Image (cartoon, rainbow, N blue to C red; front, side, top):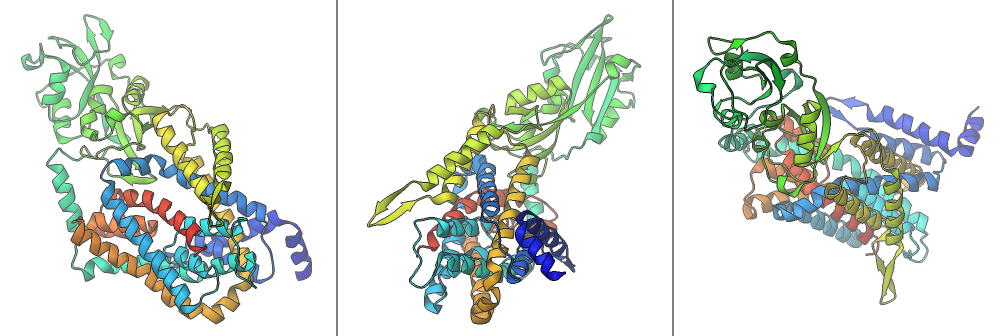
Length: 559
């Protein structure tokens, strides 16, 4: 029975792959207290077990996963990466450089001093910083024709060393970082919740904070019977009254029309008001002697739609959400702002950046107007531009194969670098010219997540064969060095951020978790701060870290 199963799995790589994925998801869901391994670690461990049992990965499937993952990482980071360079990127770039250079130096020094096998330095760096792009870039560099292994060592030996070193150091890189980030604020005497309140209070000085949801919208039909409202343009009333609203329709003398900002109200007008629920709005709209409500089905008709709008217009970059006044001018409201997959607080003082994706709800005409103001309205939200996606990957692979010879050594971007660079280029170009390259968020998630898991399954299957030997010979040493490669960059980055860059500790910790590509650690910070404001620091450093650590993975295997 066992031999029949082995024969079946050995002859069907697709069945083997999805069996590894299935077991990986089960392992990833195992929870110890509040900690959970997650899908990536689960699939890696499942692959290592199957690899140790003698099953082999399919190189084509692993390569497909690698390509999808690396290109999608670049595509997602493109708009934010360029924007971070242009605006306030110095601090985030510095933090990302400190983490990458320190981790790189420690991993390389340890490998040379302790005589690690070829490839272990790359796996150590990738695992300790939980950076899958580093692992992917190192593996691709070794598999390329330009890499020449030392005498007596095969390319497959080096790739296996990368994988096993990654697997051994990844657990502390994942779990240990979260544990340290949980304890660090208290050890340093930093109250993250108080810091979040302080940051939000500073922003509140520029305007009131308000979270919106679809249930916050109210529609009322009222009659204008107060002299103070007559003879004044709507734009003036929008600025004066203490709550966000818009006059959607006006019935005057039996005629129904849609006003603009210059429309002047007249005595006896029946108007349709769309507003966000606030105490001031309720007092004004529910009566209390202020305005008389009327029954008019046409005035009360309000058919909102929801759409995602990508900010691409240069003149909208840097504006706050309050300055846009989407409610006052377009009867619409913003319920969500996503920046590189991280949801930000929706407040009047939230400053918008190129590549931000806003979820907006309002009438069709209002959505079109907001889309025109900000950049691109995702109307065909389910459609993916696979033509651009395919050709960009082709060009990325071709760019990666090009190299120049220096002292007899080929120097080039490599496959990982070429795909990452093309992903950055296409992602940024789409933020400027959104008529091409559409890859909706759900599709990007599938490409990134599925690509990563296909790659990790292959990595585990290939590395499982030498796992036990590596654990016996270098396991304890790798764990100790891995702890250092995880913690030293963190501590040094915090020192640089506080003493040299004068960063707020909450934003700094967010930037450090971004530089170490740890979404789990960011979640811990958000829980302690009772706010998601640290996500701004995370996204700023994360964009740089993905590029720097991908390059580091390709470089360290040659050293």
